Length: 61
View 1 (cartoon, helix red, strand yellow):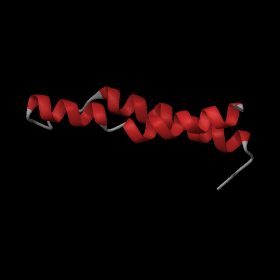
View 2: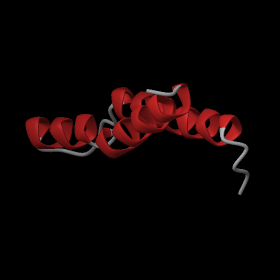
View 3: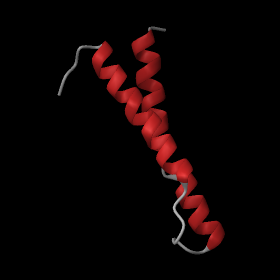
């Protein structure tokens, strides 16, 4: 598998699952007061990977 395909796949996975930690915390605590840092970490990783993927593919917006 090519590096760009791997990065694109990982980016898709991370950005898709990014809200799961937050949803779990809200359901577990039955409050939305606290925001899960894990949600933002996973979203940051996914977005960074999408950026790297676009750069490697020379596919600028």
